[in-house]
Image 1 (cartoon, rainbow, N blue to C red):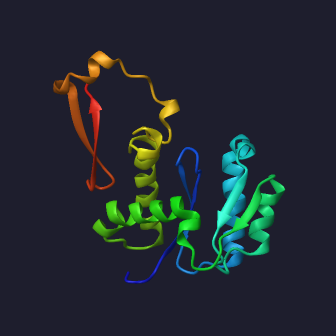
Image 2: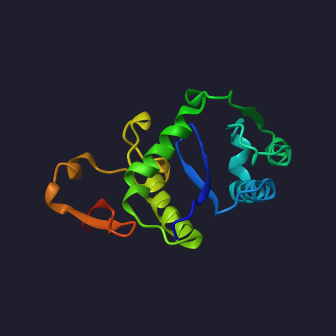
Length: 174
């Protein structure tokens, strides 16, 4: 309790899908390399569709970290010092995580942060609308297409609390 924790997240710029790689109190270069390997394994076929990895100049991002992604065919780009706009999508996601979630929850440790952050990212990727995607969530392609006539009937909408009750999702009642 009352210690700083670090989370490593990756964002797919095109879809705005966020992947949680890991949570730790003491990030090291070796830890970041292992999280990169885990992500590359998790993404399997989808990593081939990616072209770039953009990251800042944090010492945690070692050459070994970059090599994991170069081996997968990605070009690694380091942002310039003191240029948050160079990776604005990531900065915006971090701000969203803080405003919508982390500022409202008391985190008890690494495992707790990983659990609740994973739950929030499920909501973020499956249900939260994104302005850059015409109000569709990142995983909109995997969701069924809604009948426009049903969208006007507000009586069938039900609220479901998620992420420890901090956020509510709206769903159509069956």
